[in-house]
Image 1 (cartoon, rainbow, N blue to C red):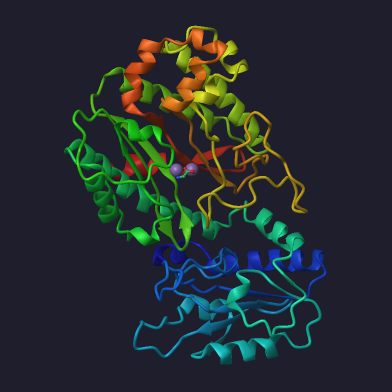
Image 2 (cartoon, protein in one colour):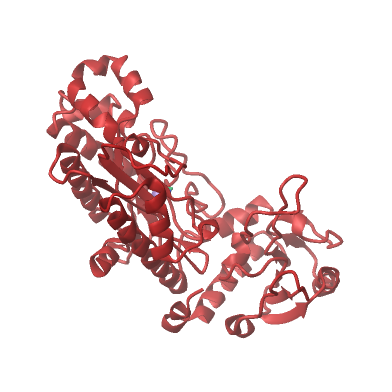
Length: 447
Ligand code: GLY
Ligand code: MN
Ligand code: MN
């Protein structure tokens, strides 16, 4: 949690806004109180070790710090949120201390003992009628008189509301962007200096000052054909020879909020792959510029496929009209993932398919079943715009076996397969009258 976000915006305004959201959501589903546990790290099977703790995002939205295992929030309409703060007296681990901002935001009760905390929580909910739990059920003593655990009608409303960020959340997303961009610039330099995937990954961690277990998602650091594996997960210790291309998809985290950024580079400035990167980069900028309140994200996805068709024809990769490449779904084999997704406390943030707060769904169109975001965009939404062009052998085989295979310049495609692919990913904020790219100005300022 960075101090600067607290200095620039009102954390307490954020707490007031989200408390009011919860009150409306609880009233809409006729519920009197909600218990929101931060959660407990789950041990590996037959082990006393656990992965690094990730708090329940419903809790994290109130409490922007990971150091909160076993704490619980109690939300009761008309009252200040109550924090049951867990602070064990341990000499094995460093106990958390209660941050000043938490004291200002919540009524706080501190407990060193989990059982005592639960007993007090049971007392806290007594007298309330319908009580629900929102979070990992296994982290609460279920002597609590609960009506329901994660009731869908309530969770849908909360997830829908998370699409619109408060000023505080936007400030944290800006911080997360700075964290990520510092890493990206160091990674690019490590690539240019001849580093392996592992060297580049370590340069990213060092410059962004992130420990690997706290990254928003595992870094994708891909040289050559590895760039055509969408979620490539290894870090080769040896640099390939020759090295042709470099794709890095890596983010930053601040106060629990994520950035999600991708850049692609050629090892040979001015070669055809480099030109294709520049071509996609220009199309990505044009697509971002289309964003305005009310635009259905599906329209942007369709537009991007049309732009890609254009690019593939203009690079003489496809020898047909752009219209025909789009209509016959040829672009789907070069760009097999969605154009973007909501971003926030989760990298693929929740609620991307909700048409309304009641949980009515805006299903992705049948042609694009993997599209994670289908809502019409509104001011305060933050999402990614991440087009790609990949040369993936299994998808190219499918293309070769289809009628459209006749319209492909195969020698050109074969020459690009060893470069893997290209993705350009920025994070954008919808404003009252348009869009702000959160990512590009930070690259410009830090480079
Ligand atoms: N880094 C995962 C994604 O871009 O969606
Ligand atoms: Mn990404
Ligand atoms: Mn993404």
